[in-house]
Image (cartoon, rainbow, N blue to C red; front, top):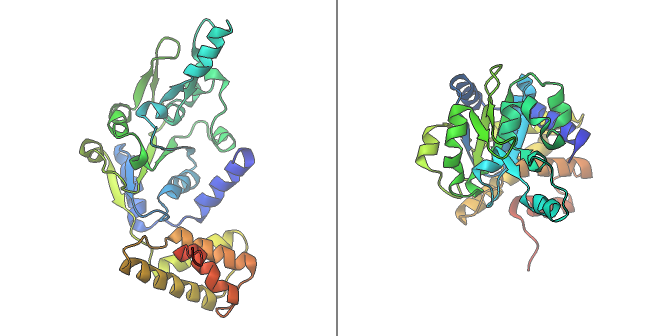
Length: 299
């Protein structure tokens, strides 16, 4: 997604998110003491969307980095395009400096947007949203850090603690220090596929998102539908909740992953848009199998 789609989705996600009182407190604590907020929770529990909610609710700039097995700490600071530089060298197209091969990472944009903007003539992530809030502090999502290189969390300790780093490959080394106008909130999520270093965890505010209960799910579904001007009958919504709870019980007995809040919302959205509004509808059971239990109907 790019351009207006990014902007619109950011607003939609942020406005429809309903944080609990404990989660809101965790955000305030992290901002008050300038520590990253580390969120644990099942996939689909809403960890990643919190950062968008904070950005929209508080009018902050927004950046995100989804980690992979190849992600290193420097990727959040800056990257250097060695392949492009090699090609330019072979074609005798090198500049006097290597600046154009540098791409600012999310922490560079968050700490010093004014220093990132001219680098290599880069387009700012979520440009439409952020350009209207250029002087606001930023919230940064580092998503699924447990998938990253094992050394990556410890590699972030120094720049996150000092709120500064030196981009050694730009202009012979330029210091990127957080702008004094505001503290960046870094929200880090983990699905606990890999244990994080204790030295890293100790330097975070830590919160675990519990599974949403029945009443929470009612409010969340209502909020999501309300923003789009859609509704669902209370009786049919309750039927979907009954089916969700039954699917969770089966998954628990079989030691499988239970269907999440995100999957419940998928079921609600599918039923509303496909106009499946009766428990006895022949397609409903198959739809819920596809979403809740991932039942393919046989091999």
